[in-house]
Structures are given as structure tokens and as C-alpha cells.
Image (cartoon, rainbow, N blue to C red; front, top):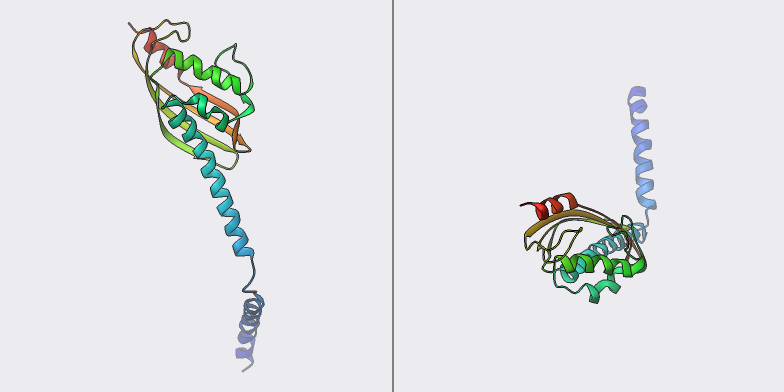
Length: 181
């Protein structure tokens, strides 16, 4: 009998602790609701960051509406983390300067977003683009050639706008296409 009590006692106490814990749980406890609300908020912010890229690339670039959407996606004090052009102005004017340089050289440029990844503070995308070289770009006069361009862009998002951007575009590949005889 002593042996049975010896084994019964730990199991009994564990069961009592479990039942007490279950009994003390409050069905109106909001911790699960708070977690879900936080997750929903994070999900909404991530989707909003992705939507900024879609608006800028698919509507702005592909529909030649950059001037119309620039104020919706870029902060006034936007910073280009690695400016492509030495004389590129700062802020939102710099974003439009970048657009104008490419738009003048590649007026029919069309982007395809192949990858789009975001968190609450950053959004990153990889693109493939095609265009016809109809104006001077990188010191190369118009060739009329069809070109393909790939790149990756990272945007830091603050207050629902791009605050800083970094891009890695295959400019060497683009230049080789333009110079090819």
C-alpha cells in the first residue's frame, strides 16, 4: 500500500496543479485577442509596404504615371542610399530626376516584379525589365536596341512612404547590351 501511495502522490499533485491552473484561467482574458490584433496590425503594415512597391512600379513606371504617384510613395526628404547619377538632387526631386533619366533613355520601359518581400520597416523586390534604348544613357547615345535589365531594390518605409532606398541594378549587363555590335 505504501508503494502505491508513493507513486500516486506525485501524479495527484501534478493533477491538482493542472486543474488549479485550468480553473484560474479567465475566459475573458484578452491576451489571445491582443496577440491576434497585433498580428493583424503587422500583417496590414507588411501588405501596405508591398502595395507601395506595386503602386510605384506597376502604376508609376509601367503606366508612365511616376509624376502622379511620386508624392504617394516617397517621403519629401527621401534619401537615395547609392545614387546612380552624380548630379542627382536630394529628396523627392532626386527620385523624379532618377525617373526622368531612365524615362528619357528608355521611354517604353516595363517592369515585372519577380520577388516581393516585406516586413514592417522594409520592403524589398527583385525586378526584370525590358525597354528600347531611344536616348542617351550612361554616356551611350540611342541605339534602338531592345534591352533587358534586372535588379534588386530595398526601401526603408517610414510613415507609409519610402524614406531611403538602395538599388543594385545590373548596369554592367545593360551597358554590354548597349555596346554590343
